[in-house]
Length: 160
Image (tube, rainbow, N blue to C red; front, side, top):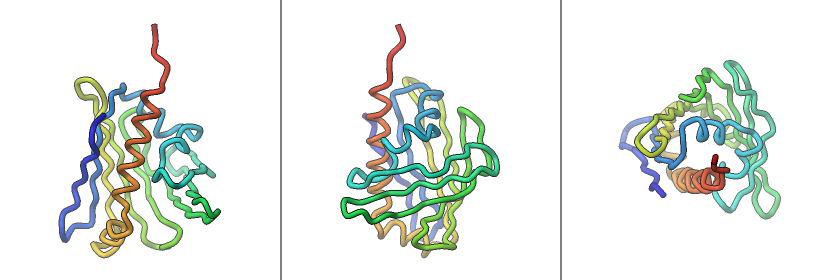
């Protein structure tokens, strides 16, 4: 299993998360865009995820809700700006707990020898907003999501 790499440079507004999966690009794209599979991998391990809305098309809405063991919910939402299967999608990304801090996220899937390179680049409205995500342990959630996604992909049926 690949490690998740982060590029978080001081004074910049972006976070880049990179992970290489041992799966074909089409399979990875399906796992990250299928509303039935997203709850199996999106978010930190200590939270469950529900997909309320997922309209995978230009102008389509999305909303996921994380829930903790005490029933507290944390909503995330946005709008898809571009979807090019199985290569990439671009969407806005907003934690409902900090309304107005809307990031632009581009997820790119590149074929590499033996698998797929997943690159998620999030550009936040300010360095302060980006740094707040880092202080809130966002990279941990991202890392755990990538680990969980690798687990989902490892369980995929193989063709004979």
